[in-house]
Length: 251
Image 1 (cartoon, one colour):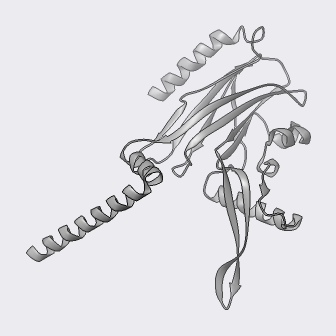
Image 2 (cartoon, rainbow, N blue to C red; image 1 turned 90 degrees about the vertical axis):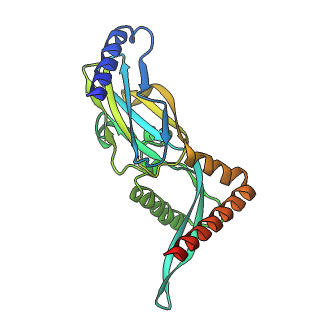
Image 3 (tube, rainbow, N blue to C red; image 1 turned 180 degrees about the horizontal axis):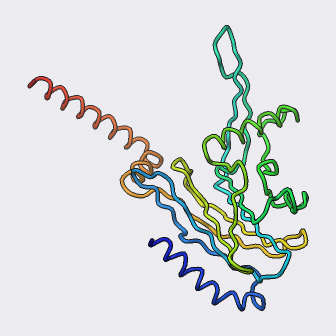
C-alpha cells in the first residue's frame, strides 16, 4: 500500500509538471531511489523508473540499463579422456556486468537497425572485444553467445525487453529488477525518446549499488588490507577451533 501511495503521488506530481514539458524539456525522468544498499540477507531490489515526455504523437520510449564494465573470461569445455575440462578460453574486455532493456513497444517492429547499433539496444549490439588478437571471427561469435547465455542464466542480462507502461499521452513508468547477485558499482540508466525512427531526446540517470553494514566492512578490509584480513581470519578460525575443542571436552 505504501509503495502504491508513493507511485500515485509521483504520477500526480508528474502530471502537474508535464504540461510545461513540451515548451521546456521533451523528456523528464527520475528514479524511486538512487541507491540500492546490499546488506546481509539481500534478496534483490526493484527500482521504479518514471518519467514524462512532451506527448507528441508517434513517439516511443526505450530504456537501457548498463552496469559497471568488467573483464569476463569465457571458457569452453571439452571431453578429454572421459572428463570434462576447460580447454579454450577467451577474455572479453569492457563488458557490462548488468544489462537490461525496456520499451513501450516491440523493438523489432519499429526501431531501425542503425539506431539499435548506435545505442547498443539489445545484447547482440553490445560493443566489447576479446583481449586476444588471434581469435577468429567465428570463435569470437561463439564465445560472445556463450557469454550472453551465462549472463542471462545468472539473471544479469534480460532475455526479452521489459515493458514500459504508459499513463496517458505523456507519463510512463517501468520497474528495473536487480537480483541478489547484482554487482556493486555505478549504473547508467539511459532513457531514449524516439520519434520518426530517430532519437529525439535522451537522458542518463545514475544509480549506485553498494554494500553496507558489517559485510561491507569485511569486504573492504579484505580488498584494502589483505594482510590484516588474513591474520584476523586465522585468529578467528583458531579461536573457533579452541572453543569447539573445549566444549567437546566437557561433554
